[in-house]
Image (tube, rainbow, N blue to C red; front, top):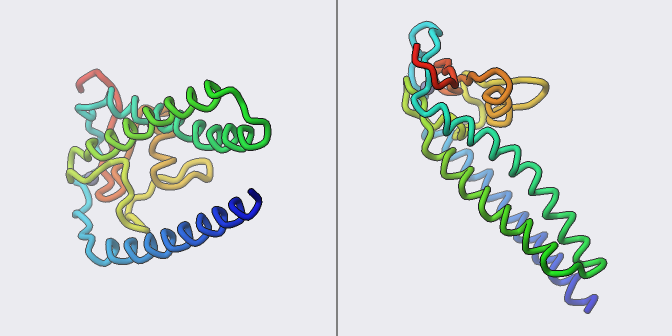
Length: 167
Ligand SMILES: [Zn+2]
């Protein structure tokens, strides 16, 4: 039993190390291939046509941030105390629903000016990062959508209002 656990841990370590190295290599490739759009004219904010979806994405992000550590805790508790199956299955289902929904929205929502994906950081240092309360990149963008109902494109700097009112 213990041998099996040690073996799985070793495999998990090697897999995550390989995935990490692969991610760095892919990141370098993407940085090199990326073309930054010209800065948006002025910074006159535009109401985003999919404001409701941006808000949903911002709140799904919170759900995902809560579910990831929750799943770790639940799985550790399951290993330690073997919980009733419902305790494991319920959060697993919730996580399995929010993660793809959040990813799908992040892949669909685009900047009004340059059409790049507003919520996806494709390069390591975008020219217009949103920094807030020590948060970086997309985390700060989601936070700003929730608290200020605004977001800025990290690629061209276009400011978007997250509002259903057209101006
Ligand atoms: Zn843009």
